[in-house]
Length: 219
Image (tube, rainbow, N blue to C red; front, side):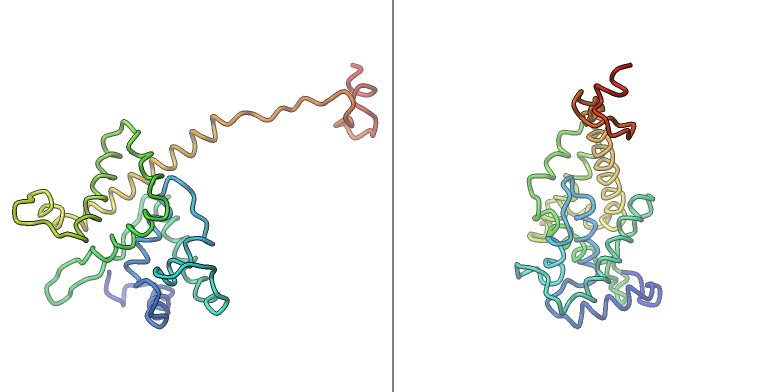
């Protein structure tokens, strides 16, 4: 991720909180997890994903002692959502300052945890004819697979992705987010309109207190 001096104060505070909790995700992993939650084609409520962020290996409701910590996580969730909506999302990758390498693997592990919450929902992206959407989903899944089994020397694609992952991950996530928004708008526009027809024996909408058939319905 960027050097700590470049992190906003709330993220520095969140990083300390996550380290103190021990069971919680690290900041880079949490950032990838929240990006996956936002981009997922199916809505995931905080009541489901917050406990995972605080302790990925435990299931159950959020305990009250983590309420203040949860507020910081929710703040970062809103920041990730806002940045994706504006097309300005920048993943928080760890940096190996000694070798000058961007360590994207922890981020993608967090993204994988989000995908695991709704594994079948992500397949809806495969139905999209846009090659950019398909490439983004397949590419991210390839990176997920690479964290479990690093590519061998004969895997040219894997070697290329290892080098370019920090640059292409933001574009892929942004592409899937744009597609999710587009699908949400389509569902909204295709929703059946609510009928405004008033029954003859219902109260007249003019507020007279009379039945519709004996008031405006007589016109």
